[in-house]
Amino acid sequence: MLLLVFTFLSTAIEALQVVGRDMSVVLGGTTILPCKLIDAEEPVTQISWRKEPQTDNFLTILSATGPLFLNGHDKRFEFIGNFKDSNGSLQLSNIKLTDEATYTCIFTLFPSGNVQTGIHLNLLVPPVTSLKDNRPTLGTEEVSLATCMAAGSKPPAKVQWLTGTVGEKVRPTNNVTQHANGTTTTVSTLFGVPTREINHHLVKCVVTSAAMSKEESLPFTIQIYFSPIEVTINKRSEDSFECVTEANPKAAFTWSRSEQSMPQSTVRVEGATLQFLSMTSDLNGLYQCEASNLYGRKHSYMYVHVTSGACPACWTLFGLLLFMIAFGVAALLYSYKTGKCLRTEEDTRGERSKVPTSGSPEEEEEEEAAADL
Ligand SMILES: *[C@@H]1O[C@H](CO)[C@@H](O)[C@H](O)[C@H]1NC(C)=O
Image (tube, rainbow, N blue to C red; front, side):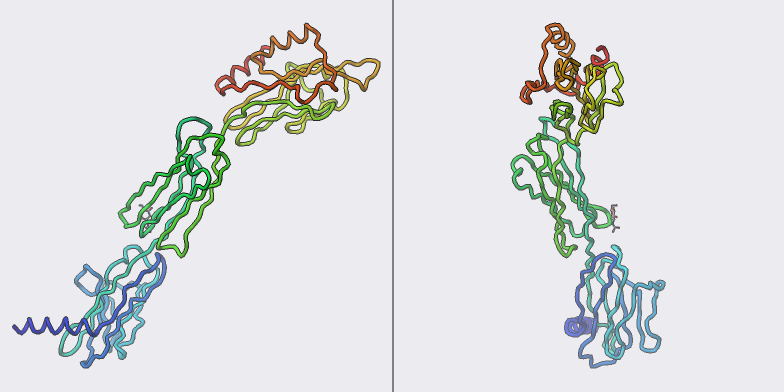
């Protein structure tokens, strides 16, 4: 009966007198575990702290000796209260995930005994965000385009895509992994058919988390990678030619001459441009422009014939032929035999022949055929 009365008294006092407050703190930070006894009419003999669910105190504070650690001194805890003012507050710094718990602050009164309150320490861990380009290559099947990740977050982070104008052509899928230490990794992958239509579109991955002061926005430009689609040789002026293609990443160009080395003194090559410095018959022959990137290569040819006649300035190209090498030999022989001769002036820009597009698997064959020439 006495025990019952005592227990009742004790809880009644507890509810009224010990004041604490739950705290949320970011990993690695510092917090206060506030605890104060108010309106005590009896003297305090001891203040103690316990971390639930442990049943023994890890710290006791006596007016005579000050704070005393019972299971080894954890320097991260500091008593910042004041015994005389019945303030038992602690400061905890360099906070770890394992510090998350309910801490019980206990005041021992004489003669009533203990009054206490629980203070919950809630740990917040901001996610580590990242965005990965999955380097999709041109195709017709749906593939993953990019992956946005919010790793090790507590509470779980929200990961969303802002897709703007490509919204209907892409879709996100989210995957959440819970870790043993209480954090969560959220991965959102953006799927879509890797067409040239969605290439270069800007999207955003937006990560929100209670552990971050504001949302994080990771911009991403959708990149669809492809080998050079077709190579055309454009005439820039009387004596210079430019090789053009579409590719992602940008293609590198190589000019070469079939079965002959480039005449060093009369030809200048600068990236995609081939320039003849003087019109002499040693330029004659078949020139190849090859466009290549990580994903493949493609080439085109141009046949050059300089006629040194009465008027050296009025040189002509015997033929300016752009063709795929698969048809190249036939076309070359044909034009050579029929003596088709185009004056450069007539060789208008529109006249350049388009190279039919073909898939990249044939490209190696093209290379072999070029060697046969
Ligand atoms: C929690 O666990 C995950 C997975 O093991 C780990 O990557 C992460 O770093 C951990 N977080 C902390 C704060 O220890």
